[in-house]
Image (cartoon, rainbow, N blue to C red; front, top):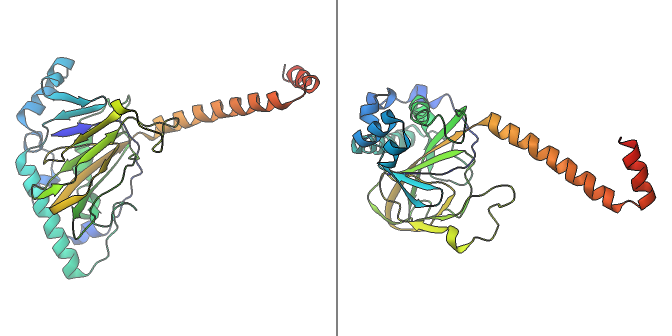
Length: 269
């Protein structure tokens, strides 16, 4: 099951480990839609209509869409690949780059050469939030009583995030949502009751703009995919800068004495 909602990303790429680690499961390095996606999801994509997507997508809460998307064999191979990569890193005694500052346990998909797979999966959603995304970042993270137990509420640095649970052997790790965030409604803004939503993080479920409650037992593995549109962000940033400048000028004008304000207005004409 996949859950999607809007957010914002900063891809980080390493280029050395993937040349050292022997690829496992060649199917993951090629993009065969019938291997990756369930028949129902493929049918919805090929239909490319509101009705076809409505047949496989449900709305769990405003802005959170759920759909069965990836094949079970994909999860099995990804879990096995993560385990083998971890074993190889321990034997080789190699220090790997962590996904981000929030996660202590995990690795970038690019470390074992799956960056092309990530690009192909994210290209299935070219019209999300408007134009096609121009950068992606993917990683796997691990949860457990001997690893990261939870992750507090946060906003992902991406327009589209898919957080897929690959593991079945854990308890806890409930995902919770607190509504859409923007510059005026940031991560610290009080949440309205209708924006609160919680959901058990079961295998094949993906999410964003969320937090993870504590893992009480077992070992959880999540695959997280971020997609970003830099041009969209740049345009918004420029628009925000213009608005901020206008606001500052208005505030400054209110502080001037009437005579000085009139001089300023005449000079600007």
